[in-house]
Image (tube, rainbow, N blue to C red; front, side):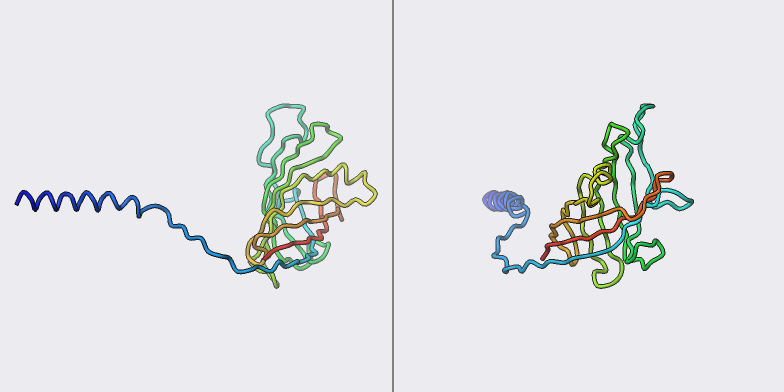
Length: 191
């Protein structure tokens, strides 16, 4: 009987010791199928509405110093995307994200911008791409072309693993209330 207890105890110890070995994460290396890179060009309008009773962009944090102006103001947004330059034109999606004003000099307007551009209708319904870039607004105003380029850093749905760039220009800006509309020409490389 004592010999059976030793065998059963040994078997239990062996089985319990094996569980952590097989309980590790699962990993398998496979050869991926060759992927064909696609290129998609998009054209739409983005409306950053700060004013009114139902703003699409709202300041959520400001520095605790009196002479900061816009410097370090963090703004959250859920801005509409439309087919045309008017806010009333056909809505095709929305942009959710944040931007923070980063220029100390009050005559310079520059922001760091992160946003997810999601499409809610049409061919790309359910797909999105992300931008993360510096947006130097004062440099745009001084440039003759008035176009700024932003970096595409990823995507989902039809734009999975997207890279590329967005070229944008201001089509409307109201210095009094901060509202603005921008035209976007986006080139995406994705699989």
